[in-house]
Length: 509
Image (cartoon, rainbow, N blue to C red; front, side, top):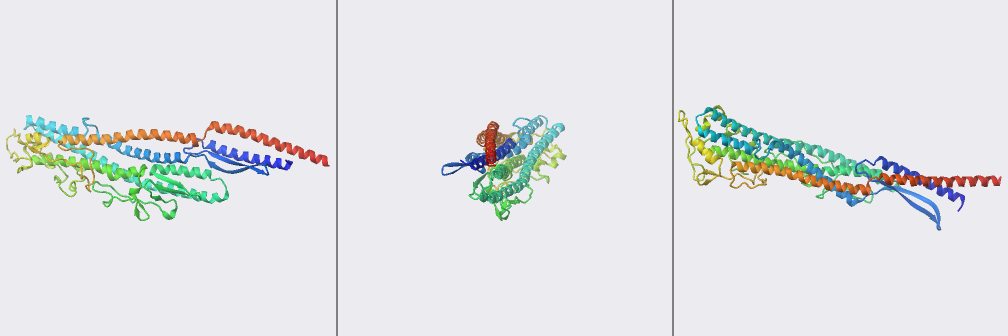
């Protein structure tokens, strides 16, 4: 081997070592960066006729396990979706209470029942009559507060969707920009590792918004799809996704009921965006909160109609009316009633009506028995109405031997396609209230439990990814020592060659 060959080999080795030091520095600097994959250099030995000519330094690549990365991306969507749902349901929990707590609607209904029982012992007591009206007002206010909580969380989901869609568009654009740079560098044989790490970080952000799949293309591009196969645009010409601002009153619904869909290129793609924060917000907005609202509307209408059926119009809308059922869909006449239910203004102005009654009942074989209100100046000890309420309004029968009309648990909502996740057949009002509270509380508890499980899995997956792709400081330090030794060896070779060249020149002179 000639001196020039030795010098070339040593110089190439130093250049390769410098490149390795640069990568090592890059890795150490990003050791705490979430999702960063360690960058490794590529070296190829150069030979000619079996004679070593040094080393060729190739572009850096990522040390990454694509299958593990895909699992983490999917798990991110699952965890973030559950976190979004948990936040909304915990806000409901703070208002919902627990059965028997005193603040839940079942307890408030029980207080009203107790006040009628007390009134039955002294029907002429103005104090007891006022106490009944006060208990009724507390129940109505409790229903109003819970309804308002549903409305607030539904609107919050809509608002969060608007923000998330904007973030989705920005993240897709970032992926597209990075992909364009990668595509441009590929033919030059330069490293795209830094850009790929940045793009992977953007995919991680994307995965928190919606469940996505990615597919690397031979030219360096990256195709992004939802779990349902929708191709998401990473270039300006194919997007962006849009969502119109909207309010979400109780009677609104998606699609076609005043709630907008998420649009892409003129097409509604709402149902193709599952998982993650966006998927959770869609479910909260279009299913969870409307179902909770519909259950409460059913309870509010049931309470109002069962009192009125016995001759006391105790609960009404602000105009003093009890909304009727039997429409198409079944709740068409009282969607959102829980938000406005209140004590009948006539009863508020004259509490004695809780003893006397507000309206006559003709009687029906399939409903309540006939009833005539206590006339003005009638006996102060009139107990007919109070007994009817105690025996039938709060019970399972409209009159002796006649079953109360069941409160609905299916065909609910403005479209009639919502279903309550509990069975209330044959239950009294208290049973329906308890089932409603317990079911919604259980739904929240289930989400919290599932979130803990999925977060544990997410932590495990991240640990596996880190063990494969993360920066190991011990490894980097060991590599640094090896590079220092190699640097010294190559430097000594160059020094020796220089000395030989000097001696050769001196001998020639």
